Length: 126
Image (cartoon, rainbow, N blue to C red; front, side, top):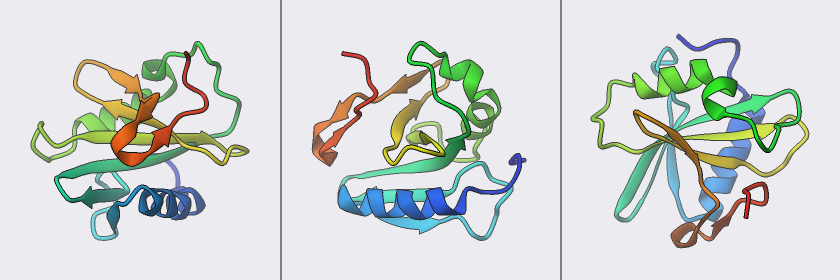
């Protein structure tokens, strides 16, 4: 069950960000109890996306497993096949860029760059 209200402005921004990378999207408007906001897809690739906004600065040494424990639990429990990729796009309320986090059963990984999408994370450690 999602906590709090959905970040509508951030979801709108995520749609635009996804379109810049060549994705089309479908918003989850029918079953809001499921822990994802969008399905993103383009030729040969698709994934589920949850958009999250945190209030305060994100410490560069933070553990996402601690910061986003509830969100990660929701995304991992989605009733989709396990092979379906899942991401959380995270930003603070004062940032404009999203951090793309790939969620798998045992870990969460921050994507530093992803050439097929032309994505570069300015917050990723070198």
